[in-house]
Amino acid sequence: HPQKADYLLFQLNAIQKATIEDAADDGDGDRLSKLPNDLLLNILERVDTLDALRACFLSKQMLKLPTLLSQLFLSAVLRTNRAVAHVTDNILSTRSPEITISKLKIKFVLTQHESLTIGKSVARAIATQKFGAAEFEVTTDKAYKICSPADFLHFGKQFNDFVGACPDAFAGLTRLWLRNMRFGEFDIPNILSTCKLLESLRLSHCDSGIHSVLQVEHAQLAELEIDQGKFERVELICLPKLQRVRYNNWCSYEDPLYFGFAPQLSKLILTKTAVRSQKTLELSQLLANVSSISDLHLDFRSEKIWVLPECPKLLTPVLSKLQHVNLDHLPEGCDLAWTMFILEAAPSLKELCITLWDHWCIMTTDNEFRKKYGFCEKIDMKWKPYAPDFKHKNLAKLTIYGFQPDDNLLRYIRSVMEHAVNMAEISLHDRKVCVSCSDLD
Image 1 (cartoon, rainbow, N blue to C red):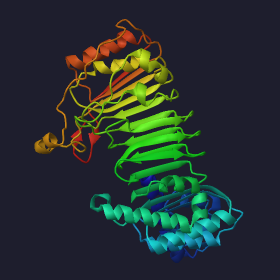
Image 2 (cartoon, helix red, strand yellow):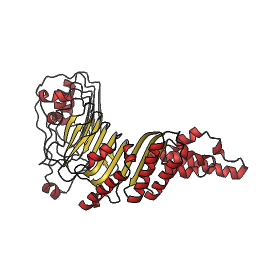
Image 3 (cartoon, rainbow, N blue to C red):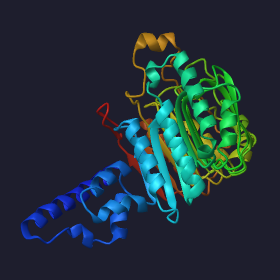
Image 4 (tube, rainbow, N blue to C red):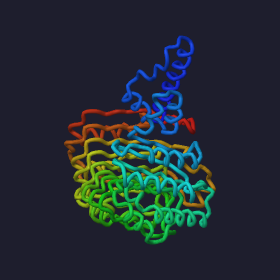
């Protein structure tokens, strides 16, 4: 919570300033020294560690607190990589090994010298101290939009070298987020085998080449997120602890995911800006090996609807445990009747949330560009109920954002109420607010 952290830091600095001024006025000394350490540590652990260090320099008592922090957050976004590397090395090398580091998160730019300093410092700390969770968020000195194919390959090789130089650091990581890297065919599996404790992996604009296939196997991984990238398919071969998958804007014209052994998978989030030529997903095929999904979030980015309504006979075996469905960024004005296929096939469904929104921030609005790359005009999804008189006994809440009192939506709400015999709440909202495009939704 950055805003809360900033407020706490402001309060802390205000206390320090008042302390110094009062000490000068009446000789009372440093009032901060009267505050208990556990209270000060609680405040310091809610802000960036570099900010906490800066605050500690103003009080003699607080000078020793940085070595007592159990949570460390270091980021090179607003500071230089060199400062983050130096502070990481300093704090981790001067800590008491008796104090557990419950959480360590370091965000840094991939560079040869500073990355090695950070990696070796973390490796030493993991070997000599008590650790809870450790997280690396690694970005590059070039933003995605200005990276050439050679840049992606260079960053991928640079990261491989980093892992090879600091395997003990990566062996202790629980979370890893990488940006803007292109790897060889076996590089990502090799990285995963090094990161034995990894619970969360996020890849943003990373892949193993255009139309490559990524195979994922890991004993501990519980969360996988992929943003963009050029994978033809991501195959989740054996992930016994996987609980959550998010895939944002795949480029494949076939099913983007293959689920092998993932018995604990409960949440699936799929986001896609689809064009005319891309495949409409059949959930019965995509989830053929997964029957444990309880939370499904589909984001259509205000464009083509890319899920095919299917009959309950095909879908119920894979959606039998589904309880929460979120259909996000559906085009405004589209007929929602097709969404009833989810009610027909998901007998355990409790909540359905729908957002209707032509969101200009995320849409392509240039007509020539839309025509050239096959963006669709608004077309209603065709659907007929397989059991017109079916009754749903568990759906208790329907939420619609972007509601307008037109015949289309009123007819849809009446239809849901007729089928959902135990409906307890219908929540209708106007458009949400987008600060970026000043669009009310």
